[in-house]
Length: 306
Image (cartoon, rainbow, N blue to C red; front, side, top):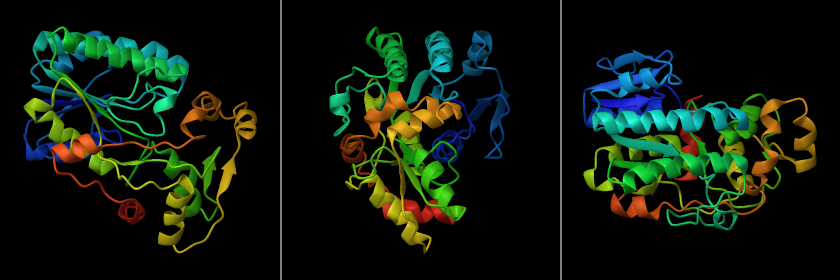
């Protein structure tokens, strides 16, 4: 049995399809899970309840932790350490391997222009400190020998049917409405984006590769060093339009944050957008002979999906 916690989210809904190459026993866990493959086992659960977490994991060979909480610091501080502790305890008890889908917030600010799996961990942000805490909890259990696990780390992402992408929310969705595409702080810095179908395929490969465990892997991401502006121009071109990019400066973000809660969370993350942000996935690409989807193809497929 391979179990997905947070099954119907952006990565989970793609991962369910990819796992059929390895097993026909897939358990989907969320508040209201929905079948994607006919053989999927649905397991409705409230993952804030430790007992329900354990029941969801019991009988699993591999567990994929893909949960996404509301993008709010107070929520992350409250919910993430509790969930990670419950998942770790259940995986250790039931001898399940754990695959944790993580982001780059824990890296030191000096690493952002060229992030690798060996980049220093020392987050400058409060949200990053939460990610640093939970990744550390997991690695401690791996180092103790109690747990077999791996961390699958992604850059900001984009892709078809994606509701969690800042690129799609600010640029593509505005273009669909006939509006100007937007970006934050500086559109002329290099900015990597992981294509979600590539990430899901990679997670499935890693979860089913015994020697991939007990280490960190960056999800396959195009090595093209394009700026946010250049990537947004790919959307313009593919959609046959030529809308000028509207860049939202920090002062405006702070003002809008008074009225729009999610924007209130952005100022501490400005360092992700005010300098080059390059995500190096050569470790995965080399090990698995994987060629990440180009930005041009990824944009084309994202638009084709509607």
